[in-house]
Length: 397
Ligand SMILES: Cc1cc2nc3c(=O)[nH]c(=O)nc-3n(C[C@H](O)[C@H](O)[C@H](O)COP(=O)(O)O)c2cc1C
Image 1 (cartoon, rainbow, N blue to C red):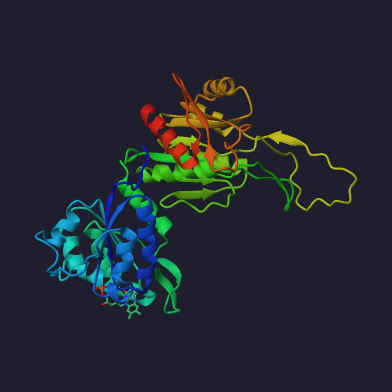
Image 2: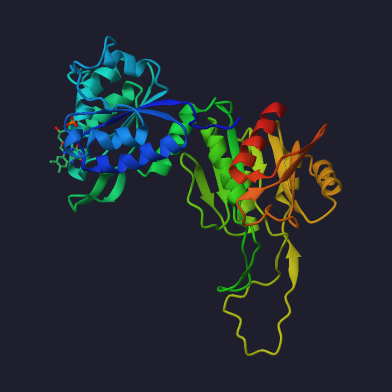
């Protein structure tokens, strides 16, 4: 099941913060993702960005006056919230937050919020002192009690040149939170442990043995699992990828560290997806000082790392265990062999000799093998592939 914005109705409340211009970009992104966005602006917000900007980007009329006489027979503040999937208030000023915390309804946005049945998500944006003020803190706490989701503002330099916590969060973060609310939540209640990326096996303080894994497939699964309602722990080797929203990341370097971290989280997991490319071997000797190049030759002795997947297969007590295998030939044969040998419930095999699949690229083509079935997934983005793998995992639960 692919979570998306297509056809979803999002009411966006824009208030009088200097950050109002930033959400013009959000409306544009939502419109591209085929969401239907209705913008409500407070009077103060219209002093920062014109309603025309939001109307042009959303393709919908922008409203801000509760008593406008050209609105027709329906009552705007009731109608707007009625069939919304989400009401997003961004940026939310200290003033609007105070209004909502006290249940005031003296403008179109606050009245719509009171009348709505939809999930309400609030993105405060203000000067750090304003945000830290006990009044604002009490008001945001009250909103949480009312079951509104308040997204913590980011830290950094603000428009007023002060440093502090009060910046509007980035769209990528808010997008993930919206998608989680819009998803079917079919992984709610599941605790998913995902491993991703390569490991690094040090030779000396400057050098290591590693592999081409970028972590993209595992990170895509972590994002998809979070969106679908799961609690996600991601154990990651070194990658350049940012930690996905809502995901608890544990960073490791070596296969031994990976093993320790995986075993520490294994018992609490209900599903384990082991997509990391753990190095099979490590240098026999780890030199304390950098190996100098003035020696005639250097031989590297390698010793085998522990097979973590096989160990989990032996230890599992009800967890659904999914392995990943990068193969360069005899895919089915190798996959079936590993499924049996490592006591897995499912294995995802990809052909690393094929173009556009496997390491580093953004697409993948996976064959899923479980105890009964062999399923060829189509060549697709890693994001889409992640959802297809999770779809199949759900059928095995
Ligand atoms: C240049 C300027 C920037 C402002 N930026 C913010 C802001 O980022 N956050 C905030 O809470 N208030 C900010 N304010 C103050 C609000 O605009 C003011 O409290 C207003 O009454 C908010 O009304 P509203 O919540 O109905 O939109 C700013 C005011 C000015 C003049």
